[in-house]
Amino acid sequence: MSSKTRSKARSKTRVYLAVAAFCAIVLVGLTLAVSSGSGSEDEDDTFLGKERISVGMHNDLPGISYEENYRRSGLDQLVFEQIKEGLHIKSASPSNVSSEGRIPALEKGEVDMVIAAFSITPDRMKEIDFVGPYATTRQGFLVGPKSTVRELKDFKGGAVCSWEGTTSVATLEEFRREGIEIKTLVDASDCIDALKSGEVQAVSTDQLILYGFARHHAKDGLRVVPGVTIGAPQHYGIGLPKGHRADCLKLREFVKRYVESSDWIRDMETSLPDVPAAEPGWISDYKPSDEAIDARSCRDEPSA
Image 1 (spheres, rainbow, N blue to C red):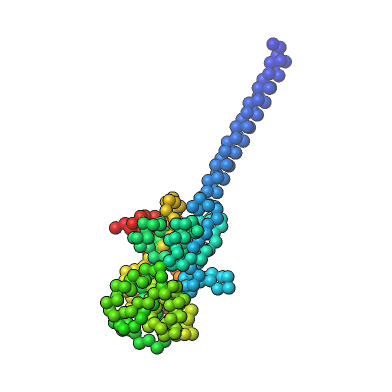
Image 2 (image 1 turned 135 degrees about the vertical axis):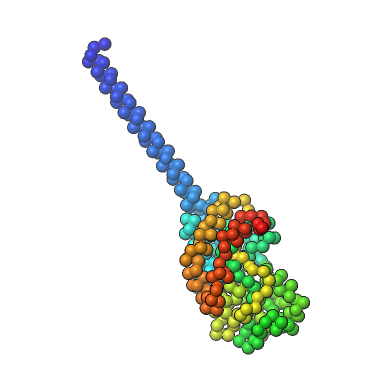
């Protein structure tokens, strides 16, 4: 082989090597890009395996979850917005649910998540997963302007209203022996109407809900009875269908960060300004701890 031929061969070899190296670099780059892109999409744009989720919410609880003129407001609505932004959920839309229909809506797949003043209980934890609580409250009483009630015994002989599908009815049942007559109606608005008409002496449910009603019906003189509560604390959680523990745990960690942030305080003050006005120590009373959230989130029963 002549020197000229050898030179041409070496030149071709260098070209082949350069092309091969270039192709390898491009292939690695494409692999990394695809891998990075798909991981980002799964992490940032989907939840429960979906890009679009439906969130069951109340539409008749002022200060908690209320819809008027096609606009929603309240603490649950702000929590919904925080979750959507914090978990980078591409699309999420609210869907109305009743208290009684929250678990069936999840089990039937009619909604993917429920944020609806949803108290976490051991029985409910067996049916669905919860994340939370994002707020803790107790059951109290809402009365009219002429009420002279100052303590629990003052309700003796009078009717107290609550509505179907809530833990409030069961708690009231424990106090029937105190001479309280219990009236159970279909929904919250029915109880409020019964109170304003004088058909019942009080409405009883979670104090957070009652503070919202009191402000919304301020012109009617409705007010929360200070210092009178019954039953155990109510822990508001976010309901999820079982079978999605990874997403459940991801949401749990977000809720813990949210509750510890100034956003939580701002959202409470924005939605329910009468709470801090009436209760100076409200933050410690209504804000859950990390331990409380861990004990009730993504479990089939509360941890000890």
